[in-house]
Length: 509
Image (cartoon, one colour):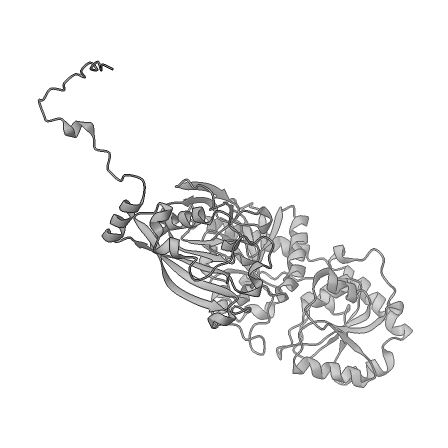
């Protein structure tokens, strides 16, 4: 890996969770900063990139260190850590202690770094690309006050005090991020900001985003609130009983609008490019050392996930036949497979896939789409090591949802696995077959249930060796003759002569 490697931004998003879309704002800001420094930047969800410096966002909700085995990863902490902050899982704190980390607030570093001074600080400030082409004047905006974020008792109490002054605070009734959220921010006279945690660490990322969009921010301030200097004179701060006086008398007056236009202008003057240059230098130095530790040989995956897209499994070999799902490798296991297979992947570098090298294959609602299922099952049998497992989830034949997807070509019932277990010889299999190790019915929410309420089937097939009796039965039922190709030399005794071929005898009609 070159120390001048590209930068890749990886957002860790649990399956289907909309809240991690909030990390797109910070990743976009990092991308803009690094591009200004002349670096090529890519971005993806859950996918690391081999040969690049990976900045990882959102690892606090689960990130296996094994996933980063062939990568240089710098973790971006955007959480409030420490006394009075968010209670983090010990594994995340341990990950930060053992890894290269960038933080947005120096107050966090003391709780995971041996020397907080070693942690680069990358503030999130003005983002010029967010400035709207046609901004509604503050005085004409239809939303007086907008609140963005999760609610708890602390924040609710602050909002109640505002509304007791006769003001209305608008809030979203569900998760809303990106352009859909920004459309409302652009219509607000102000966004209000209250601290979620008792640590009262300033919500820098959210506030800077609103200010960059040209919307003022009115924020709670306590003795513990220590904002970056860029926010000191660009946010309207309220402490203690100042809240009641401001919202009862000052909000919405000409003096308020004049002050807010000035605050927005002052915020635009701050540019942390030098801090990001330091972050990039730190990351390049770390990547250079990390490159000495990474195995330069091909990746030999032992875990395979059939399907990608929302089902992408970090650390696994994710296969798909559709490029837009961004798999590690485009490969159709329903077609003939020549092993060993060598390939180059963006996520893991060079890859080597061999017969009997895989411990586990996962197929979550995939097999109902496969036209040549026999070929796929055969290739999976070959790839798995003896004792390896094939974990499957498929629609149940009698469920309402079995044929709702127009791309389904089959549904499954209890007998759908017979040919891969008991009647394996029909498929030309001989030395190995599958056995059912586990089987469960699932309801429409993928919860275990009785057969009568089943929408899906979940089962585990295990690769096992056939018994001598099973192989004898296979030989009896299969058309081919299974004989070794005896070498001719073994049939000729030493010092014996080989008789010449005789002339064909004439046959009289």
